[in-house]
Image (cartoon, rainbow, N blue to C red; front, side, top):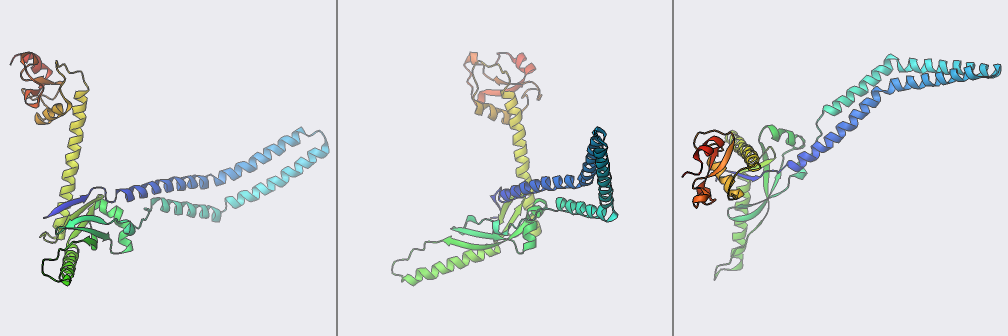
Amino acid sequence: MGLKLLERDYLAKNLASRQEYTTQRHEHLTQYRKDLLNKLSNEIALFQGLRAYLEMKAAEATSSRKRYYFKKRIQFETDQFEKKKRELEAPEQIEKVKRELEAVKRELEAPYPLDVNSYLKPIEMKILGNECVVKLSVSNYEESIALLDKQQQEPQLLRASLNKCENKVKIPRGKPSYYAEEKQTAIVESLRKSVSESKFYVYKCSLYFFDQYDIHSEDEQKLLVKEDYFKRDKKFATLRKEMALFEKLSSGNIESREPIPQDVRFAVWRRDEGKCVLCGSNQNLEFDHIIPVSKGGSSTERNIQLLCEKCNREKSNKI
């Protein structure tokens, strides 16, 4: 059977969850880093503000006793300020702050580990004509927490095991009941063997399957997975571009005596490859009736073509 795409967004929800958590964590740690950087300047500003307040009160004092009190308070607060400043500016304090900042930086740069092994949902699929549920997993914890990042770069092989299957074996006429049980057991064993010999890959959140009869090596299978992904990605990128150009053309003022259905417009656009059928230009395109409406022409795909404005004016209503 070869390569088969099972699911396009198999790990997309886990990846989005990890990215959302990492973003919130990044914002939190960034704010913590800013607070840490402002710690020294805030402490100094606090002491400077208090000293300025006391100096103002001393200047406003009306008695010598009050002036003496505020001068003694200023001296006391100045001594405390100088002591606190020496503590904050001490080499060991600066080194402590530096270590804290480096620890925060490492946390910001480190990827948020997510053990996806328990989040790999079972896949319902048909194997050898039987409806089965296949359980997927990663071999160890290290591979599990790195899977989201690794599968973005290279197809990752998953372990597969048969979770359950639904088989209804009919008992042939004249056969004992244990015949069906033996056949049921044989079918389950055959399915279990088929699953164990098949290959499941996850790549850019897309899940791929190679059955047990595939003859390609593991490296060749990974290349086929990449080829299939980029073919699909290119196809949809081209389709998005075509749709954008088509919608831009459709939204313009296109002169027509009879409205052309949207599906007909798109079919003609793709058939004529988005360019004038006469001169090949892709500028100022218009939908043209091959047989004019005035002469009984209809708005069907066979009677519509793409022409540039110049060719359409030259054609006019001639057949």
